[in-house]
Length: 347
Ligand SMILES: NC(=O)c1ccc[n+]([C@@H]2O[C@H](COP(=O)([O-])OP(=O)(O)OC[C@H]3O[C@@H](n4cnc5c(N)ncnc54)[C@H](O)[C@@H]3O)[C@@H](O)[C@H]2O)c1
Image 1 (cartoon, protein in one colour):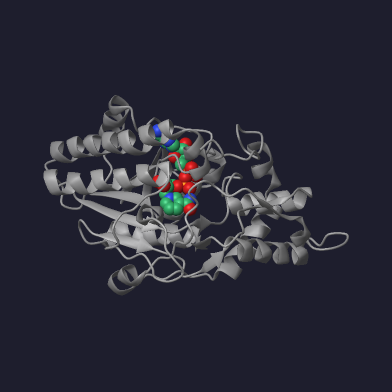
Image 2 (spheres, rainbow, N blue to C red):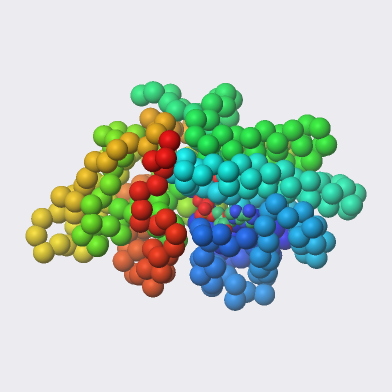
């Protein structure tokens, strides 16, 4: 199968690219290379004759038309997006532009390509989205595919809008789509502005480990390689027009998560004295910080037979080891704009 993957130089997109190439698929990686991109994430896959790269912006219709015509993909996996909630609070414009207008432009380019080829039956536009579109849960309950949308941050609102566009293009134009909404990902190549890498790298640098609010916010952690596996399964076998929630079945509060990371670091790279947990520092909460996300993964489990393969403890241990072994990857990224600074306070 030939996949056109947007955002393939980002965190999740690069995991999809690596896995797809390893499984013998052809991949065209389309990425604008924003601050969040890193082509080293796909350096090994890029050696393969199955791999091609196109630097392009998903808002650039002419570039998209050229890329579709040149590569003739069988399916599209659309991951390119602005993805950091804190940045969406300080500067929502980029999120509306890329996530909403960019998805619209992708849909129109994909539709024109699909029509020009006489609507190939196997064509799919797979839109990758987030559980954040469903809003915030209380102490109990889980998001199902039927949960009404209730986004609460500029990021999640822009992703919700993009999901609506994808469904509208399916209903109105018959574009063959599948959608997925996943929980928080973590793992190798996670950009060092997100919670888990920030905690690991600040711990190693002897800096405070910032916890927003009281650390009680709960997330359902999904190992990125498990997610990539689920995405390839959905694009190949997912029912037309259907959406699938993908979760890690690993709920943890932020405080529990950070304490687990500290315990792993204490074992793998002990400090001269004390624990990394001594560096935990509570900071002002994120405005509108959703209390809890949890995914009910019943549909993807029962219909497609998918389950996450690693527990959060295993996944975090692998992730910590990866950051210990890959300083050459993360060190230069810490110099990029905004990384290492407290963002998302301009509400
Ligand atoms: N990270 C998570 O935990 C998570 C959870 C749920 C859903 N998602 C969704 O998964 C997708 C990938 O997330 P991620 O964490 O890998 O993001 P990321 O920020 O790591 O990567 C995004 C990639 O998209 C590219 N990009 C951004 N704007 C672009 C544009 N206008 N044109 C072309 N390329 C552009 C960037 O250069 C980057 O390589 C996103 O759609 C995100 O909403 C992520």
